[in-house]
Structure formats: structure tokens, C-alpha cells
Image 1 (tube, rainbow, N blue to C red):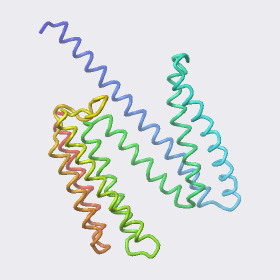
Image 2 (image 1 turned 30 degrees about the horizontal axis):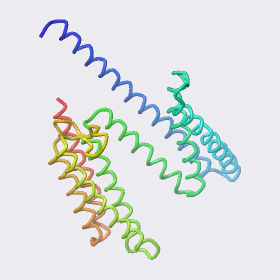
Image 3 (image 1 turned 45 degrees about the horizontal axis):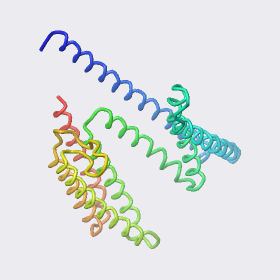
Image 4 (image 1 turned 90 degrees about the vertical axis):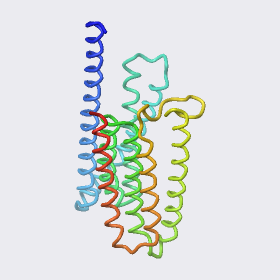
Length: 261
């Protein structure tokens, strides 16, 4: 291999690393701004005085309208092929920001006061998932979604099972989650047979060529067994199983980090 070829490869590697670092900083910054916005509104809309609540309600309402308008404009700019490059780049940003403000305003209004709390919890989780997507392999990102969803399912089971109003709904939801895990495992098997690519039509790559499918199947199995067992467990078990899944997720993070080295 020539010296020039090595330099080109090194320059390309540095360029990719710089792009990844920029994405990480951007996702982190967006997550912080979104969380500060939600915490500020929650301070006045939920925990404020009557006058502060009315003022915050007005702000939320107008931000919802502005967000919906920005989302429509962003969608148009994104789909408009003849638009100038700068507008095409702004389109996805306007669409994403508009959807955030519109949906967050709707959720804070419709689900009061828990809606703002759910949003304050969801934003850090989505931020962490974004960082995982940028820094780790696709299979670990997928495992993090599965385990994060499983922890949320256990939390819902803990709150809803055994109650008068939510027992049946939570039970049905748990069955749907279990069937979803089976479907995801079957889909992963099809992707594995297709060399890590989507098995239908476009055949885009889903998992890397060095993907550890055993770790994926183990993740599905652990999530399935824990959620199924929680249907028949006493309430104190949920606390320990959520911590157990968190420890398992940390172990996967260490495993995939060593594979990056």
C-alpha cells in the first residue's frame, strides 16, 4: 500500500470521526435545550401559582400553533426538490422542531399534569439513544431500544397490574409486547440469513457485517422472560427486575465498547 493511499485513508477516518463528534455535540445540545424548555414550563404550568399557570398555558398554546406551522413548512421544504440547498437543509430542522413543540404542547394539555413529567423523562432517554446511535454499532442501538422499552413495560406493570382500572389494559399491553418481541426475533433471523440486510425490496443494511446475533437473541430472550415473569410476580419484584435489566444493558455497553477497540 502506497504512502499516499495510507494518508487518504487516515484523512477519511479523521473526517468521519469529526462528523460523529459534531453529531454527538449537536444531539447533546438539542437535548439540553429541549429539557430546559420542558422543565421551565413545568415549573409554571404545574407547580406555579394560578397567575403563572394561566400565563404558561398561553405560552404552551402559542408554541403549539407555531410548532404546527413550522412542521408544515419544514415538510414542504424537505419534499420540495427545486428549493435552494439552504432551504432543503433547514427543512428537516424546521420539521423536527415543529413536531417537538406541537406534540409537547398537545401532550401537556391533554395529559395534565403527568404529560409534562413524561416529556421530561422521555427527552433524556431519547438524547441518550441518539448518542448511542452515533457512537455504537447499530445492533447495540437496537438492543438499547429493546431493553429500554422492557424497563418501561415493567414500570407500567408495576403501576397498573392489580388495579381496578388498569389491570386488564396493562395485561393486554404486556401480551402485545411479548408478541412484538417474538416478531422482532423472527425478523432478526431473516435479516441474519440475508447477511445483515433488510430481507425485502430495498435490501439496505440493518446490522454490521460483524454483528453478534447471539447477543441480540440473548437480549430478546432476557426481555421476554423478565416481562412474562412479571405478570405473575409480586410488586416488589418489579424494582429488582428493572435494575437487573439496567445492569444487563450496562454489560452490553461494555461488550460493544470492547468490540469498537
